[in-house]
Length: 332
Ligand SMILES: Nc1ncnc2c1ncn2[C@@H]1O[C@H](COP(=O)(O)OP(=O)(O)OP(=O)(O)O)[C@@H](O)[C@H]1O
Ligand SMILES: [Mg+2]
Image 1 (cartoon, protein in one colour):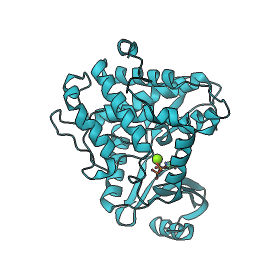
Image 2 (cartoon, helix red, strand yellow; image 1 turned 60 degrees about the vertical axis):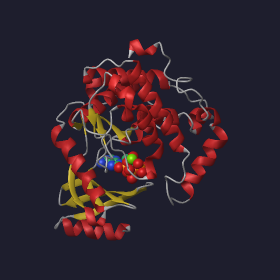
Image 3 (spheres, helix red, strand yellow; image 1 turned 90 degrees about the vertical axis):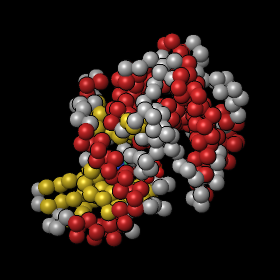
Image 4 (spheres, protein in one colour; image 1 turned 180 degrees about the vertical axis):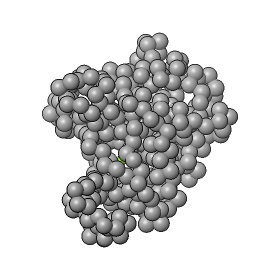
């Protein structure tokens, strides 16, 4: 669907409203249209996400998961956009627009934030993931299911090797993993003017809910978040321009402490081993072009870039060689 077609579609869906402002963001898996809906004095901004390469049941599940979170998480710190409607056959999902900033922009230094602000963001990210896991928990005995086909092979192999460890972990619940729990899928909104910097003044919104009904341990999402932070450090602002106003370890520690507090759990060595192992699988997965399918030039460029500039990060021998430092087990 192009912009004109989306406009027509929405005006038919909301009789009496006109679509005025339109902004389009092209993402790898979708096209995001930000639309201003107007009727007289009423002005509402909505987001229409149109998926690429979608299965209708996947779009329907993403919407169902967004709705479940929105309706159940009545929290002063954490929320999600309000779900509006889904047209699964056409791959369309609509939700309210969040006037916030991507956490990834702050970490990339595109919209730099103070270290105190980032600390709050780390705390809230931990709370958000804990809320999500509490809500999307599964029976303790449910078998692991990550994509049965080869697309998530690295993750599957990592989990298969980790089964015995799982019994020894303190973090025992099984969950529907968020799967892409990274700063790219977190929006932060100032509820009050910025000059009153306090945790109470910012709110975190989760976007991009899972569209596959996997069952896994929460460690997978904890590892993905860590991987995402490390990936940001491979981008030019940190790598070439020396902009390193925040550190992966301390940001992640803060996130993990906040998560553990909310989950009422103290991680043990096996928990950290599992996170570290899944993190490594994510690093391998970043290089796997076949998984990304026929996505055009973008994954190829990414791989060339990582191979050229991030060899050290990709070639990590022992899983504990870089993270976590084992002294941290007790702290976590
Ligand atoms: N409700 C919303 N309010 C404001 N911005 C949004 C909203 N939903 C999405 N966005 C913007 O669009 C971007 C992409 O959204 P989303 O992550 O849902 O799509 P995606 O296809 O999964 O993207 P990607 O392939 O990059 O993960 C977000 O990073 C955010 O900047
Ligand atoms: Mg996303």
